[in-house]
Image (cartoon, rainbow, N blue to C red):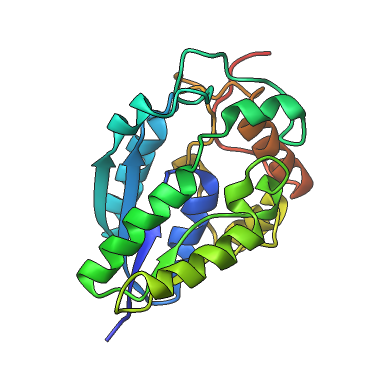
Length: 220
């Protein structure tokens, strides 16, 4: 009988790769997608379609109430989304305080409730410079907490913790994944902007893998 596993699935290319990787490993998957008031809510529709296609259990959880407390991020406020590479200091405005701790806490609770022993989450090395809650020390600490917080131990699984977006895409392409089914842009418009940190990193990954991104982009 397949092990149950929860996947925090945003609809972006990292979690899209992890969802498919976990499915190929034979886990019975339960995907969680969170609406926390992000501007790029379009990713939620991508997540919904993929889970339907893969016949994965899927819940979309509305936690937009947390926006009453978290207005400092350009992802959840009326601040402009910065342009440039993730390593640029202006990208810090995209940090949503404590976001991954909140999402992991909910996902771990869900895992305990349904009898799953793993929570997959898409932290990777390309995020380490800007996002403290994607760094190895955070993941290790949360893993310890997950084993203390409940009677049933839950492992936080981060397959790409020490990989960058280029390596993640390489793995996904080797699996034959269609990245036109993922949404990365922080601006939730009809087409991807190609200029925000998320788009820049995605396009760089495709270039380094000598591949063409199937998403449509706005004209520069």
